[in-house]
Image (cartoon, rainbow, N blue to C red):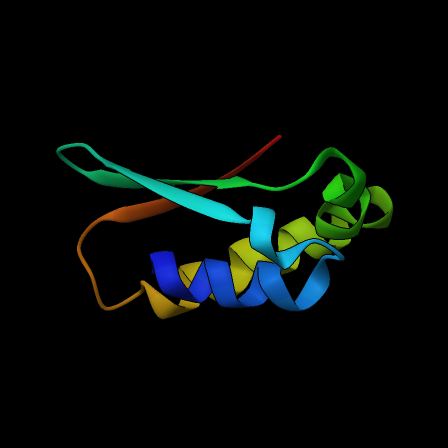
Length: 76
């Protein structure tokens, strides 16, 4: 999941070298934190959050076979 989020984010931003994804695992969920450059926040979030929602939907579909819930958090 971590690599999937990274590949999607790198294709969207102007500064791909500043993309980082960290993973935190709890009992019943996995939290993926996506960190991008401040200039690229708008590109990752999109108008009215549409791109961010699409990223979360793709990750949720990819994680559907796992028992854990996957949460994507976008941060600077």
